[in-house]
Picture 1 (tube, one colour):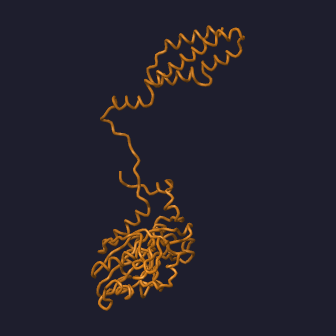
Picture 2 (picture 1 turned 90 degrees about the vertical axis):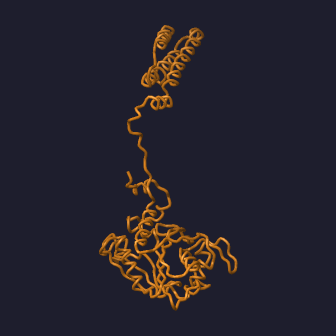
Picture 3 (picture 1 turned 180 degrees about the vertical axis):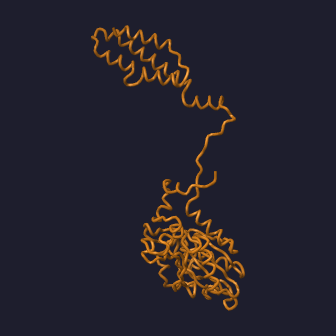
Length: 346
């Protein structure tokens, strides 16, 4: 009889003592899950006569309430929050604490730090400047003619465009070179790391913002040979001894003469691959002797002083160092990508 079974289970519940989380879970699995005792009694209740339902309905509901109340009492005593409290109160304080996951530096930060450390050994200091610049520091002082394409809206993010006082997100950290030279007197030996902005379509090879490290050395009797030896040493330190270097003539408004510098491909070791397009060489930076007009614009006597400057994209350097093929990975915050650069700190 259904009524007898309800009575039997009621007596069983009243005699049960829940003294641990395991007891509470076992109780739930027996009485309260979809195939447990309570559900089974309700299924059986559907088969009794209408006259019996009037009598057993109240009894069965009271049994269900009893079963649920018993489980609730167990939860209050041995629920997760209480278990953690008990562990804190009763745990062995001499045991090691729970571990935690260390974060890691971004790959661009790792490479930037390495670049800065290399040039610091050569006597270069770090100089920084604003990311929002005026026309003078971003273009005019650097010998950009009024009709230069970089001044067009499709190439530069202008914030406020007025005649003679255009305000824009800087397109290079060369503006920091201008500020450095305006604020002091030679000699200057500094590098300028920072973020720059250009109005470009985002793809695997380009982005509307990226990071640069530029360098400047101004003193008496500075020559192109000084520039070549400085950059050659930098490449050997960053990519390892045996990395070859070549300079190709180029043009920049702020340097004369100017050159692009290539290194032997780090992937194929100069044999030719997809990254270097079969040439065995990869371009990593632009450089040259500071144009005398730039020195004069910054109040420096170009007849007494000379200097060299260079600039490189940190993303390009990082691509070659870690063989990363898509620039967008640097700014997407994908943990699967970033976790590959875990810290060595224990």
